[in-house]
Length: 291
Ligand SMILES: [Zn+2]
Image (cartoon, rainbow, N blue to C red; front, side, top):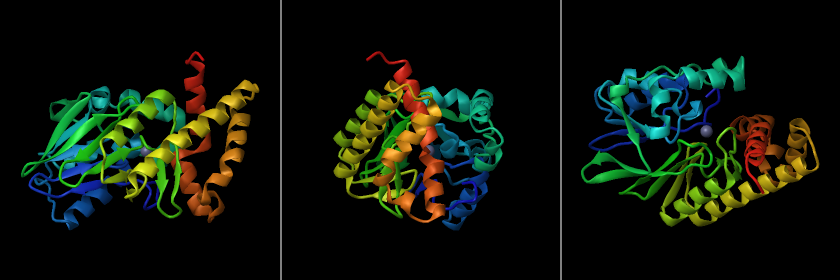
């Protein structure tokens, strides 16, 4: 993504019905295609493409990947489905958020034929072949179109961004609370749901597998509460967004080794769950939530 490697993950589940979880950005789609081909998955072999949610770092490549793999079914939560068929509104709002950086960071989400899209409700199933399946679980809070996906064979849980952003280089975990959908109570509910599923591993989209499931999910919830508490304090003190961002960034800095590491690592962290986006998302939630 945006010239970085090891920042946004796509996972290929090999089996009778190969399944790609997350496409990454549009600009990453050729990289994904080459990777699949090196693993023996050709144009007619991919059965399913599923995205945890439709943010462009996860689903920006769906249209391109759908073109490369004409037999693949595209699976997404029902609240995201129409945006994959007609990305114009999604791209317009992304343009407003990211401006000129949009092309470099994400590229453009290409439309997917609506007939190839299957929309998931609160739960759903993706057939991986041979009795194996991915069970989807609606998990809003980070985004209202977010699902977690549990592999029946391995117990791996694809958590998208619902448990935050994990940095394998440092072991840091930081929340991802962007506008406009972030909702603390809903997000904590999704983390509780993930805990109740008793997965064997968490597969973060940013980035990679984590084996220590219960303590990691506890940290995910704690991180959310800390960021919300600090943002609420800044808001109560009457700080505007810029000053609130500065305050929250300052008071959370000690928590993250990445911010004391080399500049590139710190930059990656900021790109994925930057303080401006996190604080703006929490502020937006506080604005529309009575105490
Ligand atoms: Zn993401």
